[in-house]
Image (cartoon, rainbow, N blue to C red):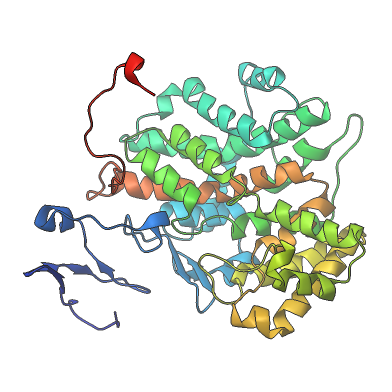
Length: 435
């Protein structure tokens, strides 16, 4: 539907001999929409859209993506500018509040977050009873659910002050929770947050500081971690974000809704992509196959070898986040003095893909996951912690989307239709008469 000024014309749908009109809705940018809600009432038909490939369950003012042009904007601001000039908490305020904060408001927000990073001793006991070998995302989801028990004053989704408190508590306690999950798996004592440190510095220190030692890292380390969180902060109506909205549409509290997002993100098709990339690069290294020959095997469907970290459900050109991550990978490894042959292999794989017509014609360009795992690995995170880090980055987007949904007067409890293809009515057969 071509963009034009004024009201968009209705769309006519022919059903047998009957013609009905469906209203349209104008987008400020991107695809306009057809309102299909009256379809069943008017025709008795429902729209089948497996995987929601062409269904918009809501309108939103938060994130804009143009997959063909490789554009990602938060509240209208290009991701490239935010990644270069902003901080994660500043971006969180932008997504949640709708505007970039003033210096005073940002400082007040950072101070409030800093105040609430601490977990009570009762809450800390959760990590002592969770098995050390438990999947980090299982522990993360459980801990977020438990926040609903520890902070009952912040549960009412229709109370703005309660929602504001829940927002701050989630942003403040998530890095502490994730650091404790890591330390528990390593068998190390849990550390308290330290007032006066930045959000990222506190998280890194609580995660990596060893007993009797002081954790220090170059500025490039903190900047890269901050940037990666910004790049993951929101990405429109993806699987986990849609889950948060769906759960929240029942007026479930923010903690329960975000925990649902964590569960969705735990799936390997959503949050596990950067770990899959790392496994692919390690396979290339360990089998001593040249990247060019590996890419030839990728093109051979009979080889069952998949190319990870390339292509995207939305982006049909170079993922704008991927170029930023690539720069950060080079910078942080240099600052840490790490020579990782996996990074060299990744560069070679990328160059082959960008110069081979097979991959170009199929629009298989690197996505944000391609270099992310290499950076996390260089920082000291094991692969099992990659998805919790993704969750920490995505948290502001989940909160912003949930809050937008709760405030939307047009919002309804999510209840997708189905097309039943099972048996028609049949008679019950007694047990002794069944074959």
